Amino acid sequence: MTSQLHAVCPACNAVNRVPTQRDGKEINCGKCHLPLFGQPPLSVNQAGFLAQITKSEVPVVVDFWAPWCGPCKAMAPAFAQVCANMGARARFTKVNTDEEQTLGAQYNIRSIPTPAVFRSGKEIARIAGAMPAGDLERWINRAISA
Figure 1 (cartoon, helix red, strand yellow):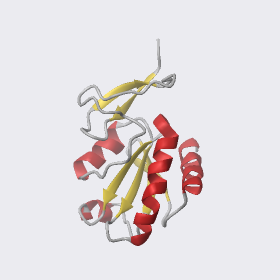
Figure 2: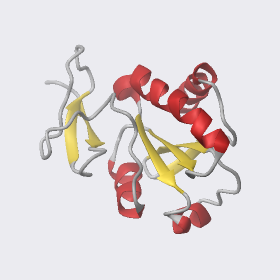
Figure 3: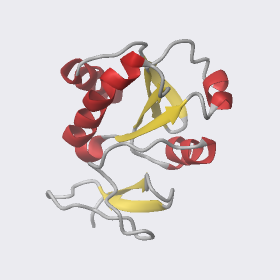
């Protein structure tokens, strides 16, 4: 019997059971049929954010950002690169703090960009400021392996 865990689709927020060992196979959402991992991270609204962090058994890396923020724009390609590199080890999503001000206030986001890692609905790590891809990936790996 194959070990499985739950992963929330970044496009439609459907909960999917995925094998922990994928053997290099791409896994698509059972509802919308889009890839579950490796795609560029999408911005989510409050409902999508809550679905991602509470229903997914995969750690969720969130980039709190805003479209007017220069450092946010500078870090976006690095965030997307790390998302592609990490595959199914983590889910990546973005929260536009201008559009989702309630989430920004709820999570006490005081500067952007602010990457944060969530596991089982709880924040387990946070760092403020833009980072290059290598540093960001090392930071995420430390956070999810702790």
